Length: 389
Image (cartoon, rainbow, N blue to C red; front, side, top):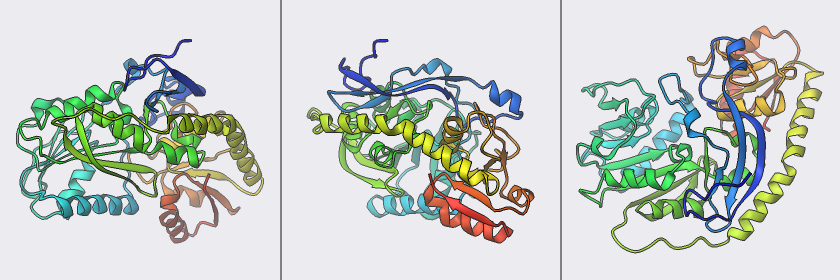
């Protein structure tokens, strides 16, 4: 099959390197029964890398399969993640006056980040836009309005103090066009600061994190390819850095009023790194499977964290549901539900106390939460050993 043109630079020299026969299409939509979860939509995945600009994307992506509605839920109700949100808010407030106008959040999810930001920055107010949110009006107690809409520039009705777009662009099949629409929202005042955040592909490759390649994310960015895509979309990128243990990357800037985006250096080296990763991936998956088999001889094995990482890990490592007793997630809306594809059950942490007297192996899907998870298990009196893939 011929790979499509690069969605960023329209280049035709795209090499497919990482292939999956079957991945759940929407890993952040859970199902009320195992039967429904097993029948959830799945599709093939193939990571292609553009040899011209270094942009990586799913060359088999079909946007018609994607449904972002109120069932979609990627909320992380964790103290660790709330602290991370507060750190972003403080960082942004240190550079810009966030009380001069509303903070617009494009792709706000359930509005959690805006709620935390407005609670952290006195006088701040927010407007979130997302097709999966529950719409609400702002009030004195909760100064965040949510619009259940796909973003378009005319929704920016008031001059923002800041426009935020976190963990959205990796979901958009035409990322440059989407960024242009975001920039169009501030054309009346191109000095309005912009803040973008996406997962960092360099971290995924370096850590051989096969569980971070998912169907929802049709785009994967290094810092260089992310800056290049933003520049093509009309952003003048002023700074970028990694965050959240280098799993994420930030880019900040404003609307670009002149000049052309520069090319991307080091693409050949990057393609070589992805090639080495692809050659090692199946060994890595089989290694994870063997670890679960060995641990299962001692006691039950569970995953903790049934969002992207947990769903993809379970589908690739235990597709038949024979190695894992189930998964744990602190998002109460997911508890009692089942993940798409492999159909593993999602449980509250207290479920671990029902698994008997044998030692439980808890596979922590994101090491950033390991301390929090250990504390919760200790408080529950669960005899557990902890592993990070």
